[in-house]
Length: 170
View (cartoon, rainbow, N blue to C red):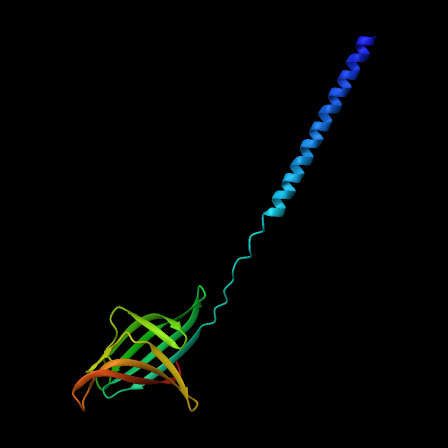
């Protein structure tokens, strides 16, 4: 009987030890889960970029060509972007050329790069890589583009500021 009692005590102690070990392990897992949850920040919400695009058109009726520049302003990856196209129509002939461009905005200057060849805007006018600007004066807004153009008074090539007036986009 004493052996049975001793075995009973041994089994009881073993079961008690097993229960304590299991409970302790579960407690450690909960603590580990809690620590993991506390240290791992939830992912940030997806970034929703609400882009407001602004479209503006400018025209210049030159001596031989009517040129219309369409600008589209928007943001892309926190950067101010300008893109658009230039349509140049040779007056009298109806011949039309079109060029597409893209660029960036830095303060009030637009750095433009044509995709492909730019259209002709005059017999003695060439596009430059100089920045474009928009100026406002007297309630009017004008786009200024620097061209390398032939001065017919001096018969020399020089930088010339061509001004395009704001018009309704069609």
